[in-house]
Image 1 (cartoon, rainbow, N blue to C red):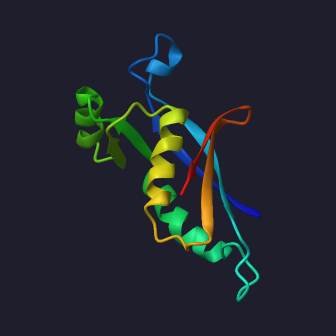
Image 2: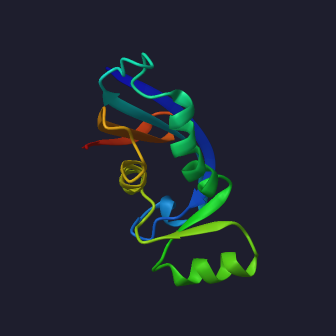
Length: 138
């Protein structure tokens, strides 16, 4: 059985690896769908309580919401955003949709999930018609 919950946030970034417009600082209205697969708990009748899903994922999203996510190697942007005293998160990767999926999968898989959960899938939509998706078997 599978359950899923969606989350939304606003975030700015730039891709130093990009040869086009995405090299420039810009923002997106992100949407993420997190799916949990496992057996239905006979005591609760649920795979996982949606409130538990929110408790796990919402703090991760809140940290990124209305901030600038910056690759740790982008020293110029770190300096400028810090000087503005603007919200930012420094990460050890380029902030592509693919890397964001990996970031969320790692964080979610390290949370205290019940033993009946066997797989987690994350889909990060950068725009309304583009996304990256991956899953992790626990």
